[in-house]
Length: 179
Ligand code: FES
Image (cartoon, rainbow, N blue to C red; front, side, top):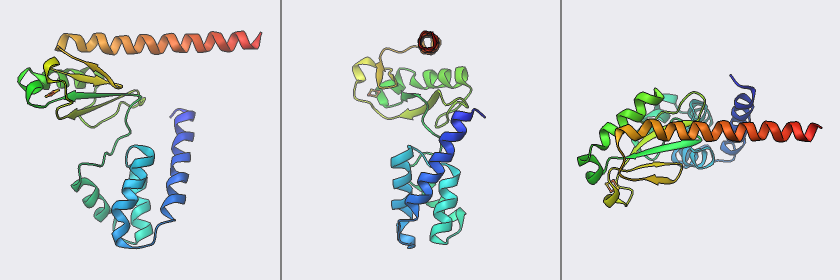
């Protein structure tokens, strides 16, 4: 695993540990603990479940049971480019599910998952409020209306090209600074 990702995960674990320890060891604090962790880190990693169970002295399966019961919790980190595909009624009747499936195929992940390099995550959502543009996908807060399955690859490619361009600029800036 990438050193930067490893360091990020260690820092996250440390942060969770210190904050969870600030909660009273009462069963009723389970949801507030999970909400606090998700509020800070945008998802609940497996370590969060272990920490909560250990702190409250309850079985880990009970923590999973509670966390999976509420759909406010997510179990994968959002990607740097979160993709939300609308499957509200207007988008659904215009084949939003085919668009979702196309994103899933191209990225090799399914709804609720994140690519291993943490670049993309996919989430199906209900109406995002622009039904006139159906079907709609939202990528990193940018709304893409009148989506079509054939547009999926182009959108992903554009993000990839922009990323490579930013990397090249960073590299050349670094080289300039070393001169
Ligand atoms: S149903 Fe998709 S934007 Fe409203």
